[in-house]
Length: 342
Image 1 (spheres, rainbow, N blue to C red):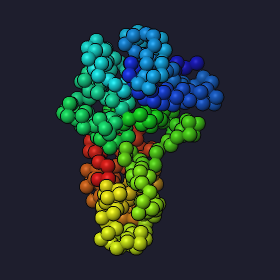
Image 2 (cartoon, rainbow, N blue to C red; image 1 turned 120 degrees about the vertical axis):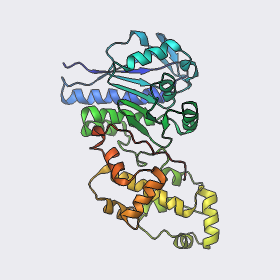
Image 3 (cartoon, one colour; image 1 turned 90 degrees about the vertical axis):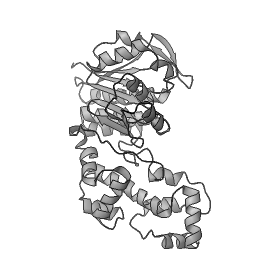
Image 4 (cartoon, rainbow, N blue to C red; image 1 turned 180 degrees about the vertical axis):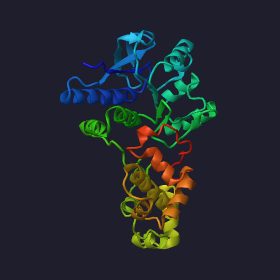
């Protein structure tokens, strides 16, 4: 049998349990499904490593039994630093030195959530693009000014260093790594097995219009935010939306901003932008067709929206995030930052 790729996940007291279990289940499911189809195929061998062997207690109280300390780990292909309460880990100089030394030997280095702080403290994100949980992004950028922090991204690849957003985003990252290793079909099989999206509806954004629409409390707008997301090709002018909500345009604009945190025009543009991002990620349509399906008046209007919010033009976004091109495009996207309801 071909030797499996060894994945080591660094854990510690206070680690976020989903940062560990999510990627672990993805790699394990990939190996199981691979063995069913081709018993001698190369899968994954996943192990947890920690500052010391023994029991590690997660932030939620789950106890993990770690067989050996990180210093004893050998032959690592992919090293993942989980997130959680990383303050004590960041002060462990021996661990940081081990990270630096190990980073030279592994094929891939990754972090989930606040695990990015550990990589940054070791100097491994200096001059690179990175992301973390949206609540910690500003703190990461402030503490490490030489790291280009993308606060809105689900995960970021910069060369062979990968960082992801918080908690369940570790699953997105692990699926992307499986897709890189084993192909799209294998990653899709794993996503189906785990009943998760291979590409989540929000695309490469931590804050999608779908989520924004769902978080609006029941009230004077009813289901209008969700209706907007589902009908991007309709006339979504303030006048038409106000009529649908049975309000005057002026009152509607005031109520909409109060309930959603965005003006109607900004909400609509962001919803169309999210849809365009998914269209560009998924493939075969031209820029003009994507723009038309998402309700933009033209490809030029879509281009201006991309530059305004993401600081990148649609064609470059497609090159970076199209599912077939992603493996072949190691250069980082350095300006995908965004804010909620921006």
